[in-house]
Image (cartoon, rainbow over all chains, first blue to last red; front, side):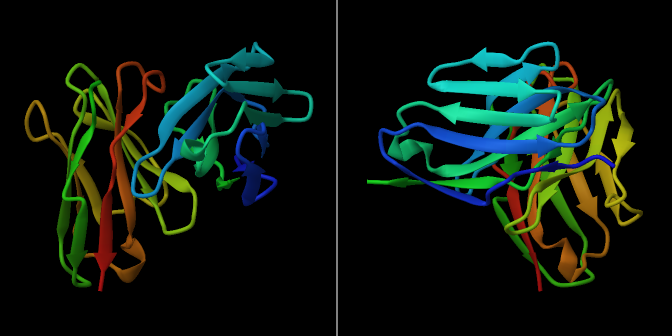
Length: 112
Length: 113
């Protein structure tokens, strides 16, 4: 069935280091993927997206990698800052669908 | 930057009561959604709405739930007879073209006591 899951529920990273958040998905029909950031008391905030015809996409300090062979998605955050503390969700959108299927979330904790 | 606005931010209601959660989507958006997030869990799709009708709903969205766009600006979620397990954050979202340009509101925390 459709499912998006995350390998680690909590990730602690030293300020200034790079963060890598991983995600596995199981629906091979998904052709669009999004990473969201959710800060306490707020709604999910779009970070970066990638379509299934790509394997890498870069934004400002963030990079998303997609490996369709093993159905794996990752979010890399360069030079992690205190403001990056949040829960990060990967999400997938099945082909020709308009609903977003969220994974369980990884809490990113920044160490001083 | 345009925002999706949700009111109230927190609602406490007694079990069995009706609640209406309100949302003002971004003005030029055509697709509207409700999601919910039980504390500590993932965000789950409830319903999508386009052209004044429901386009898709999840199994969570049973007969106790309804949505409405009563005027040109508001989008509401009604729960007719709330249950304890309806306690969650409810997020409204809107988009201009299905999942592209999707924007979430800050949510309404519903507590059923």
